[in-house]
Image (cartoon, rainbow, N blue to C red):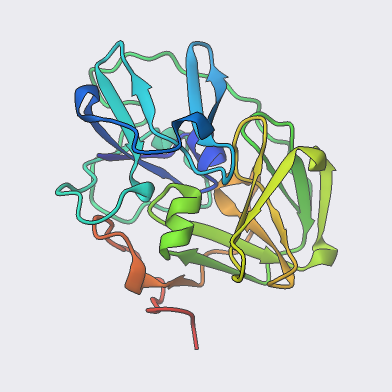
Length: 259
């Protein structure tokens, strides 16, 4: 079990890092919905799967290794293990600080020989924060700083981002604009609630969501290309956080929402 900070994981999940559990493929089976999976070839010979309905990241089956890698954010209950390391810290978001004591590796752990994948570097624009999906079909921009930014540990955010928690920045409608690909955005919302997720229908990558329910644009910070110039102000819904994840920073914590 480990945390991955590579740019592709961040783009796909919309989280600042993804956490995967590896297990023998022989122990894995689908219970429902296997036909709902879609996949995107994110690198030569490598693909990423996601639910085409809600965008949650699906398990990655690797028959050649006899392994399955499952996003821990979608698992329920006590897993009986804890994260052991951080990989691809050389690609982590520059505005994110790792605060725990787990071993860190620039790329893969020693013993895994995988060639690096070069991705184009974003060109910063003064006063503008940019974001895009994994395949680049969807891109957007925000002016100024977010009105607020939270790490959310609720079970819906953990499943929606397929990660330990979501990190969402909130902008006003006036601050936001689509650059391209708005027609490729799938908006999944749970009826009767304010919760929703937006993702690119082509790659499954998390993207900004125009949330009329919240009166704001909710932007997954992991999918940003440039610094939002605001850091999370709180961990919220920590009463629902994953049992395997330890909060190690000094950001204020709230059982539900800040009062």
